[in-house]
Amino acid sequence: MALIIDTRTEPDRALAAACETLGEGLPVAIPTETVYGLAADATNPDAISRIYEMKGRPRFNPLICHVADFAMAEAHVAFDPLSRKLAEAFWPGPLTLILPIKPDSSVHPLASAGLDTLGIRMPDGFSREVIKRFGSPLAAPSANTSGKISPTSAAHVEADLGDKLALILDAGAAEIGLESTIVKVEGDEIRLLRPGGLDVADIEALAGRRVARPDTAGAAIEAPGMLASHYAPGAAVRLNATDVKAGEALIRFGGKPLPGEENAVVVLDLSPSENLREAAANLFAFMKRADASGAQTIAFGVIPNEGLGEAILDRIERAAAPRE
Image (cartoon, rainbow, N blue to C red; front, side, top):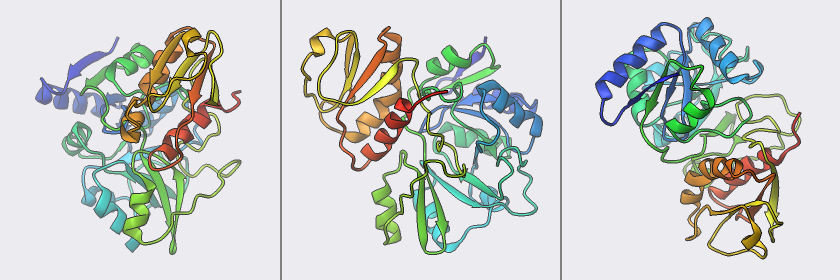
């Protein structure tokens, strides 16, 4: 089983152990403000291969590289003026930019799935300290079996991948609880590839233009989170429920009871006060609790499609998508 070190009480030990393990080419579960990541040296093909193998992730699905500062980012990708403006405003934070890889980048092509672009992000919190100390970008998808619910605590990681990992860093519950928002700038256009923990409205306000939301169904994979079925629990998922069937688990929003919920296996409310930030932070943890209840179906009540609700609905819709 994995060694778990609490970064809040033993930060120096956590940093040293993480850098030693990463230096051996082994993945480490690290806390970020979005979700827990499965991190490995982005320049080491063996280490990157271990990420794909550990997660059971298809290798055509690229990884996001995490950097400590702009100097590290600029060593690997080329910024256009608008992408730089976004990065300067929202880094460190839950924004991933898809940018052209520089010809002399040491990031291995396995991390980018062979594309000529790279998803790159500067995370906030302890993970950034790990990257600074290690001195190299870390490829870090969510620390869970591919396609399943993303982890927002060290306990989630341990339950899923604990027997495969050497080290898990524990910084408590993830603050945001949703993966990063992914955008790609093409000329004067900003395309949304995955809604996430940064409200798209904030990007639009800064850029002074609307972010395009292309239909990605069946499109070539340019970034993580574009697969139709993703973030899925073991139970089936029912969307926009206005009532509850006997034996279902219910996840609702806004403190409003639904008819029949007295017959639910469990009732969870993402945010009784209708706070979408609170709802985002609770989403994956509540999905795991509902899945563990034994219910065959998880019913989701109606959630507003505005602000972070866009990202929440994206995750729920992918969780409900047909699975192979």
